[in-house]
Image (cartoon, rainbow, N blue to C red):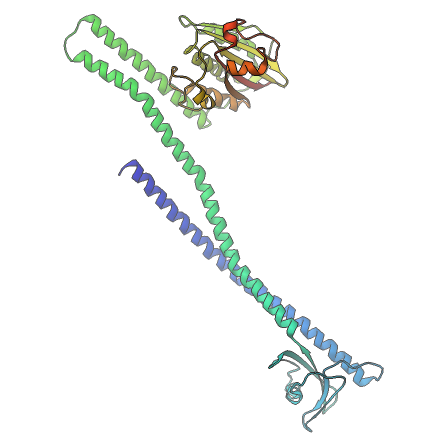
Length: 423
């Protein structure tokens, strides 16, 4: 199975797993929500019915007061009834025609509350005994109660349906977000392996070709020496690539925790400049004021060394400058080379990206930025021409360009490292 097919298979498996987990979320949410929705619906129904019953009881109490005392006005739709004698009489006004005797029989059978329907609506009847033979009956409409019950039904039905669906959608989105970083990490790892293999392929090919060429037939000692030199150069390049790969992997995995201590940044920059000796390349540090930062000496030295050596690959002169700007320390590493290619200027600090067509493996700048960010700082890259057009040929310190010469003021690359000052 090819890598593409394997990746597609993993994606399909991930989608099936996501759908299955979302379905389970829907089932579990339904199992929890439906009983609660049913209980909520029943309680709401009882509350609505209680309001109608309270209205009927209030009318009945008012009718009792009117029946017993002449000073009280009788409400509408209240009757006295005698089932045995078969008569009923309205206490006050009436505009309904309920089956009074049938309702009175319900009171006789201890059914004091009766809900019933006419062809023209729904009603509630409440009855009480007023003497040994007669009952008092009141009737109220249930139109508002019926409307309220329909609203209650729709509300709880919507909750019972939408809540599980909402939980399922949330689960689907959450699972997608959870898988997003994982898929991105897999993509990064695949790209990292591909880039590493690409970087190691060239030196290994040189080693194989040189060794095969040397062993193809007997040669003079000088020819063997030439092949061995090619092999040595290729192995050194491969070793540097592997070293940078291991260093970058260590930084990315969080295994390199900075050991912070007060560090004289100006002295460190001077030390790095004095330690780099490359034919036909001048590396110098401009003396500056004492600047102290809280940093890991070995890691920051690696940052300055990586950026400086990256500059020496394309220039004949590299100048390192340090100065303080507000609450941060700055290291500026400038050169008189051709500058960064415009097409990759924004990607200089990405792994396996080179700022020009020369240079090494392409991890030095990425390692530098990662270390600086571990210290709470930032890295920036620019071309001197573009940078000087914004600063008016001078930096914030009021000094001229790093080399103090006209040729470096209008060309070359500029890398700026910012670190927080020690408190």
